[in-house]
Image (cartoon, rainbow, N blue to C red; front, side, top):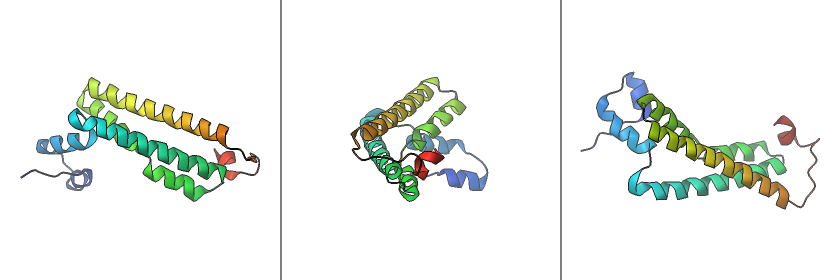
Length: 133
C-alpha cells in the first residue's frame, strides 16, 4: 500500500513527513524508464501551446493566449529545479534547469518561425497583445 501525498495535503497539514519524499520526487523528477516518455510529452505540449499562443497574439485574442498558458508544461521542471535546490541535489537541479532552458529556446524558435511563416499583415499599433507585451 503506497502512501499518496500531494502538495496541497502537505500545505494543509503544515508539515512534511519523510515518507512523502519518494512520492513527491516521483511526481517532479522524471528519471529512468519514464524520462523519454516525459520528454516527448513535454515537447509536444510545449510545441502545441506555443502555436496556440502565437495564433492568439496574431489574432489579438487574450483568451487564447491565456488558454495556451494553461497547457504549457514549463511549471513542472521549474518546480523540480526548486525542489532539487532545496534538497541540495545539483545533478537534478542542472537537469531541470537544462529542460527549462531548452523549453524556452523551443518556444522562442517556434514563435519566431510562426511570425516568419504568417503571410498576413500584423498591425503592431492596433494589436493589444503585441502592444501590451
